[in-house]
Picture 1 (cartoon, rainbow over the protein chains, first blue to last red):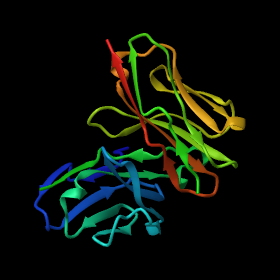
Picture 2 (cartoon, chains in turn blue, brown; picture 1 turned 60 degrees about the horizontal axis):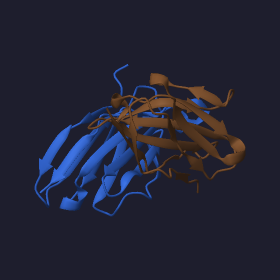
Picture 3 (cartoon, rainbow over the protein chains, first blue to last red; picture 1 turned 180 degrees about the vertical axis):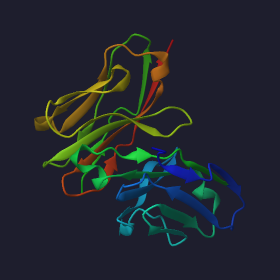
Picture 4 (cartoon, chains in turn cyan, green; picture 1 turned 30 degrees about the vertical axis):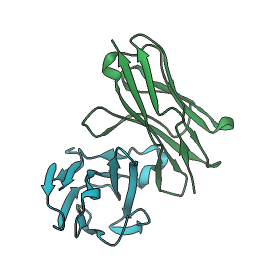
Length: 116
Length: 113
């Protein structure tokens, strides 16, 4: 299996620009998670989907952040407008049953975002 | 809401020393427990997991963890660490029926040659 695929791997953008991060989950997985990791705040869950439907977006920091999952094989996380404090590594992860019944949550390699 | 506590934020050990990283969770029902490792500059990878059965779980690279239900704990152990074990370790919990994965804040392990 190809694993969770994220793009871009690295992005440097200027403050105020729109950033779109992309994720392709493992085929057949019904849960998709977006996490943000920073030195200061550690690993934070931003939002997660079940069968393409957003279930909990309470971790999304503010309205500048939005996420969509138009189909089972694709999700986006958008930041508009971006700010320097959004600089972080954004991980996408997917699983069967959200990790229940012993199913592993698989992580992508991350998108390293720097906003200058 | 469930919570996960990793009390050791930064651990420094010499090679060949024994390791135990603590993980406690708050939910009292059925749980699925995971330990993930993140090597510098890389993504999170599964070390081991517990769902049911033998509470002593063996994972990759000589790691093991013991689920103690009465203590709400799932501590990670390794009898003899190597320099290549330098990484950050995350405990995670999924409570039965709740679906949301909760991660601990992570423990940075530094192994000195």
